[in-house]
Length: 395
Image (tube, rainbow, N blue to C red; front, side, top):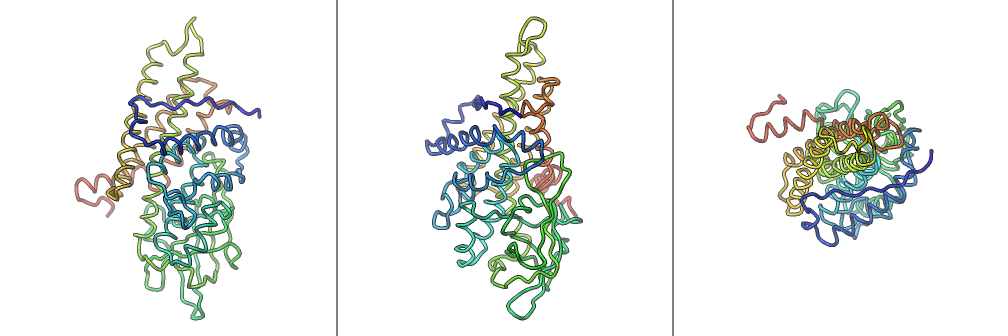
C-alpha cells in the first residue's frame, strides 16, 4: 500500500493557541511532526494487517510521550497536564491505538508505580518504562467483571516464603502481548484490592493475544492469565488498598482520552474539509452545498467546544483541583464528538470514505472502542448524574 502524504492542518477557530505557552506549542509541534513522519505513512498498512508497529515503543520513549508528567528523576518529562493532553491529541490524530500505547504506559503503569510504589520500585521500573526499553500493561478488567471491578475474582495468597501466589485472569488488556511488566489488581486474603507488579517470565504468567478485532487493529490487545504465579512480596504496591488505586489511574488515562479523541475528530474534520473543496459534483465543489456546509460547521463547533473544555480541565488538573467526575464528562464528551464527526465526515467522502486511502473509517472503528473502554459511555453519564444529584444509580 502506497504511503500517503499527511497534509493535516489543525483547526483553531477560537484562537485557543493563545491560551497555550510557547513550551506547549513546541511539544505539540514535535509530536505532530513525529506523527506525520513515522505514523501516517505506515498506520493504514498495520491496521489493515491487524499488526502492532513495535518500533513505536522506542520512538514514543525517545519523544517523551511515556509518563510526561512523571518527575524527571525517574525518567519522566516533569511536564504539566496540558502538555500531556496535547501529546495525546496529536498521537490519536494519527491513530487511537498509538495513543492507547502511550496512555497505558504513562497513566496506567507508570503513574501507579510512581504514586503508590516504593522508592525501590520507582527506581527499578520507571526509567525503563519511560525510555521505551520496557512496555507495560494494566490488568483490571476481567472476563465477567468490567464496569463493576469490585467484583473481580483475581486473587493472591501469602505463600509464607517472601512470595504471594496469584491466580485469575484479565482481558481486553492493551499492550499485553508485548509487555515486560503488568500492573495487576487483585484481592488479598482479606478481600482487599491491591496492585502487584508482575513481570514477563514469571512461571504461570501468560499473555494470549486477542484476535478478530474490527477496532484498534494497530494496537496489541490480549489477556493476562495467572496460574499459581509466584510474585515477590516486594512487588506489591505498598501505598494503596481498595478501588481507589485502579480508579485513580483510570482518571489520569481518561483525561488523556478526552484530548486524544478530539485529535481523531480533528483529523476527520480536516480530511472532510479538504475533500469538500476538491470534489466536484453538479459543476461545483460539494463544499458549496448547504447540507455539506451544515456538517462541516457543526464539526468545527463541537471541536471548538471540546478544545475549550479540555484546556480548562487541563488547567484544573495542573492546580490539583480537577475532580474525577469532571474528567468523566470530558472523556465522554470527546468520544461522542469524535464518533459523530467521523460518521458525518465519512458521508461527505461518500464511497471513498470507507477506503484505506483516507483515515476516516479507521478513526470511526477505533472510536467505537474508545467510547466504551476505561468507563463506558453510559457509565460516565451516570457518574455525572450521581455528581449533580448526589444519588447513586449504580446500586
